[in-house]
Image (cartoon, rainbow, N blue to C red; front, top):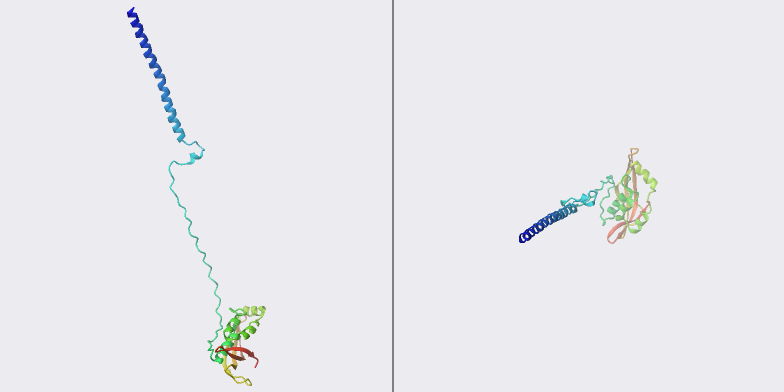
Length: 223
């Protein structure tokens, strides 16, 4: 009887051991599968899906590119078209000498270069030699635009050269405040279209007054 019990016990023990071995064998693959699934999921989580925004992203950091705007090139103005310098040359005036002022005034007043002058250029030229009263009067006596345009188109230059000065016949005697000066001059006028040159006598009688220690032209007389 004892031998049978011992045999039964041994058999039960063997069955129990075998059962545990089979249970362990069935459990281990599950654990391995779980690890494999976890590893696969990890790989899937790092793999971008085709067509998704992540699929277009590189895992390597792109170099930083700094874009700087280049300074704009400054505009260089086109060179101005050079105009011919005026042929009118006014002599320097000695304001302590009425004859000197009269000569400078008359060249500035009677000469013009229609190629480069404007119709009112002479108004600016005479200002240093005239009183405010005379300058105001003469500044309104400008040639008509059409007449000046014709002179400009012809390239006309008219230059006056003072030949001599004197005291006009019949004029009052000079004083410290007022003097009369007769200007005798010659005018040479040239045109380019058509080519021509003329020479004519010119001149006028001027009345000069002393203003703050300077002689200035105050009137133009016909004699």
